[in-house]
Image (cartoon, rainbow, N blue to C red; front, top):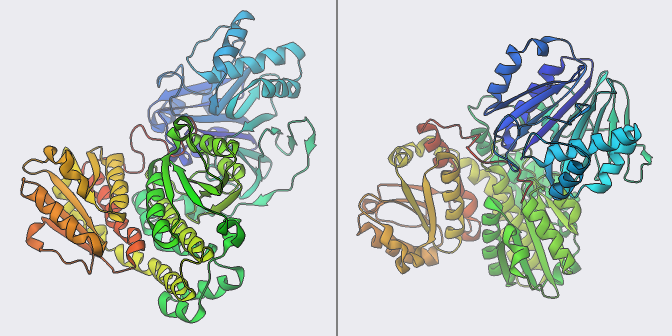
Length: 634
C-alpha cells in the first residue's frame, strides 16, 4: 500500500512524478499528491483517482513553472479518512520540511504529545505529519539536515520509507527507510526515487537498492548513502532485471488479462528456477521447444534443495510445517498442505498471518514455518515471521520480490518467478506460489524417503507438462463468457469442492469478490448440509469444482442436494471426471493432470470468470475499490 516517488535533476519534474505515480497505482490508493521545490513549496493534493490530481495540477499555474526537484505519493488511508488534509505530501508546521511516507509509525501518539509540548500543532489525523514535524524539530534544533535525520531514525518505531525535501536545500532530495521498500534510479543528470523500480523504468534501468536503516542524499549528479552509524557507504549501481514490456499492458486491455496470459511462462520459469544449475539449459530448451513433456522425459531435470536456500539435511530435519499467509497466499498454503501431506506424510498447519501471533502459537522442535507473500512486504506476514523466529523456529519464505523484508527476515527463501504483477487481484503470482508448494512437497517427500526415484521423476515430468496445459486453458478467455453472463447479476454465489478442490474454490470465490463486488463464499461440499444449505433457494448460483476422482462422486452427490433445492449449478472439472450435463447450467473441463496438481488448471477458468464478470458489470478489474496490492500495515 502507498507508493512514493521522488526526482531531482534535469527533466520535467511534474510529469515525471505523475508518470511515476501512474506506475504505482497497482499498490492501491484513495488519494494522491505531489510537492515541487519552490519557495514556499508547491503542494497539490486530491482525493480519489490519480486523474483528479492530474486535473488539479494542470489547472494550477504554479505547477507549470520549471522545477528541478519534487516528490509524489499515492495514499491508502490508515490514520484518518481519505481527505485532502490527510493526503500526502505533508508539510511541517513551519513549512521548512515536506515529505511523503510509505509505512506506519507505531509510536506516533507518544511523539505527537512530545511535539505538542514543544508548541507544535497538527492539521491532519496522520502519523506522517508527526514524522515531518519531528524532522523539523530536530533540524531547527541543530541546523544540520543529516544530523536531524539520524536523530529521528532513533526515535521512530514502525516502518517507513520517506522522500524528503528541505526548504534550506534547493538541490538535494533526502530519503530514509526501515522495513518499507525503496529504490533509487540513476539517470543522465538526474536521480529517481520510488517504492518500486517500475515507477522510473521508462527513464532508466540503472538502480541502487537501499538497505534497511539507510539515509540518502541525492542531487543532480551525486548520491550519498549512510548506514545507521552515520558512516558513508560506497555502493555500485546495478541494472534492473525488468524491462519496459513487463510494466506496460501492450496489446491487452488490462494488466489482469495480460498477467493471466503470462502464466504458462512464469510457471515454467518458476519450475526452471527450482532446477539444479546443470539442468537449467536442457530443461529450458525442453520447455521452449513447445514439446515440454517429451523433451523432459529424455533430459530428466531435477529440483534442487538449494533453490530453497536449504540442504537435503535441512529437509530431513523437518517434522512439521506451519504455513502463515494472507489472502490468496493463504489459499496457496492450503494447496501446499494437501500436496505435502499426501506426498511427504508430514503434518502441515495453515494459519492466517494476522492471527498467528495472537493465537499463542506452540511450535515444536523440527517445525518449519513457511511464509508466503507476493510482495514480501505484507505487514501481518512479516510480523508473524518475526514471532516464529522469536519462538525458535526455522523460517522459509516463498516470495516474488528479491531482497524484500520477509525474504531478509527468513532463514531460507524461495523466489517465485512471476515478475512484476500490476493488477491488484493476483493471478500469475498465485500460480507461481502453487508451483513452489508442489516443488517443496516433492523435495520433502524425496528427502524423507517417502517416494521412490521413479515416482520423483514421474511427478517432476508431470509438473513440467503444466505450462503447456495452462497454455491450453487460455482458451477459456471466451469460453467462460456464457457462464459470466449468467452470474453477473447474482447477489450471492456459492463455490463447492472437496479436498484440493475446496482449496482452489476459496481462491475462486475471493477473486470474484475482489473485482466484481459480488458476495461469494466457498464451502467444503460435505460441510454444506451442516447449516449453510439453508441459504440455498431457487436460482442460487453454485459453482462446483471436480478434479479429485476419489471425491468426485461425493461432490456430485452434494451438488444434487443443492440442485434439488433450486440451485443453478455450474461445473469446472478435470476432463476425465464424468458428469450428467443436464444437471448443470454450464460446465468447462480442463486437461487431465496428476490430481495433486489440478489446482493449477482449475484456477484458470476461475480467473477468467472473475475478469469477465468484472468487465460485464463495468468495473476496472485492475483497480478494485478499497484494496491495496502490498498491505504494509497490520
